[in-house]
Image (cartoon, rainbow, N blue to C red; front, side, top):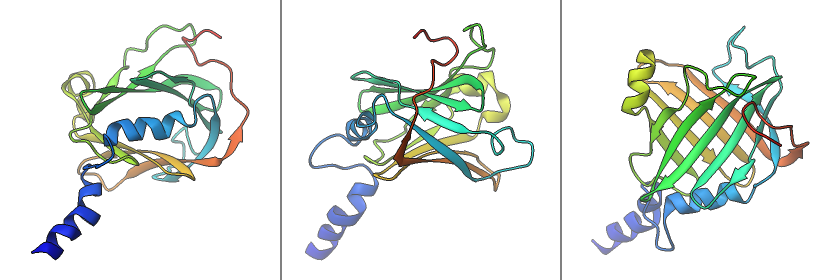
Length: 189
């Protein structure tokens, strides 16, 4: 019995978010905050399709704003500066929202979709199923699941529509900084 308990503590507990040192969501935030102000280039590493608007463009993420409980990461697709991932830490869970803007800074009609992490996740991975707001806003996104991973070498943004075999993944190389881009649409320098 003692061996089983040790196995659970050593191998299973970290996978489901138990942490003896602190909160996995807080550790995830701290792992992102280490890159505050930096920008990285990425590539579509899964789910690429001809004409998808991503595969043939330069992809850059910029960890532009790191507050205690909110991190905002603009995601540039070529010259399109409309997207920002917004991560908010509250009550030991993380909310992922997709803030979409027009060139004039106004909100897109499809914006602020995403969802809460259903559990504490780990310091290196958080999962976000669609919340009710997303289901009401984008009916086909009712079963979307997003997840983000981060380690010393890479950051991945992932999306899967439940029931679909396609997983869309963009992987960013955290070992090679790129020039910080100008402000995304809706932001001021």
